[in-house]
Image 1 (spheres, rainbow, N blue to C red):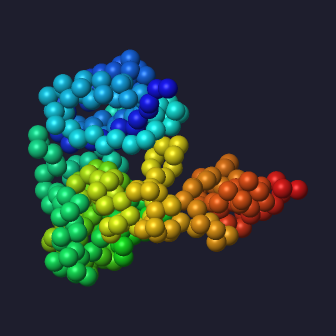
Image 2 (cartoon, rainbow, N blue to C red; image 1 turned 90 degrees about the vertical axis):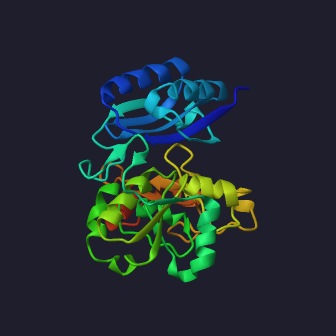
Length: 307
């Protein structure tokens, strides 16, 4: 049986010809049978791809042959090509769409003017030394935090990364500007940009977790400051650390509208007019009458479909 793996990676470095890199990456992935999503811009590259163990190893070797990509760190997780519907390799203005391509500056060492990188153990050390003064700031979409987040973290009211600049400039978080702020996201890439945006807007002491939630969870499982599950952008939809939901230290955060615990997001039955992903337990999803997001119009669609 072929063992599959999923690779998560990013690299901020100047790319003079993003289209040429795009064509090379597409050809390489097709040759190796990898599926997933890769975005390339003049600021760098961001990818999540899955395939066989052998193909993933070959991909990493070839990837690092490109001068600007040497030293790129790859995070491995369970899965494979079957976790992605297709291969998508595209050139964009931003590899993470914050809506501020002109504000981001990078050089061969990465993002210029970003937050201080902390290894997982240094995050715990900062909290041990400065206690409740430390603020964890979620750099993901608010939906992702419904199933997992750092203890007592601030979760901004954002649906997409485009909403962050508006949030940061709203005044809601001015009370944090003189506090040590630890920004975090899935693999670290969003915080590379978010931390620089925060510093540019008057936040004095901003950190980011090296390798994001993934690296922290690999280090501490359910015995650290992380609570719950991690939302991921493939068919798995979520993953857990340590021994998973059966781990004595696991804290269940996600719940269905009916109250049952769940970590699985599903599409509302009213897919023609409602694009929302909502937490739904198996019972509510399997029953057409309850396969909805909770909005009145969607409840009506579900009830009509159940007749």
